[in-house]
View 1 (cartoon, one colour):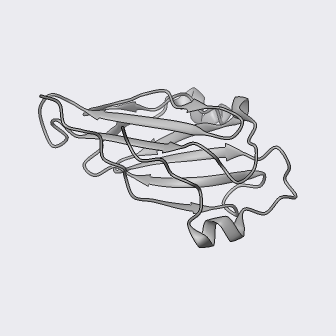
View 2: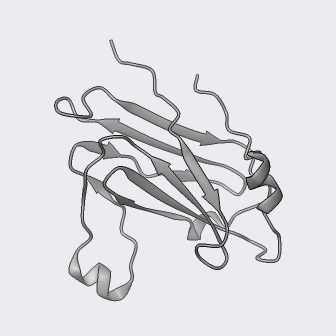
Length: 135
């Protein structure tokens, strides 16, 4: 029987990259493959690939996102499942320009603001991204 997905710990800031809100999402024991040399040179953001987990392509809409990570059938992440859903963000995002990167133990999500003059600071400080509970 599959375990229910856990909501991972995360931190949020809007000063890491201009025009974006960054979420650093902790995925314990996650190991990732590095990007290719051409991606590094061209500053492209291909979808990250896990060595010991499946990092699903996140679903972004104008006011929400969902990210799922499933651990491999063996090893340090055996049976682990993580899901982070936010149904109503404080402001709209440009879902076509949102993306994720990954490093061992972390997934970093970049949400592109539709209006760069809108500050998310109050919502970040208050922890009010309105995270939904898993069903």
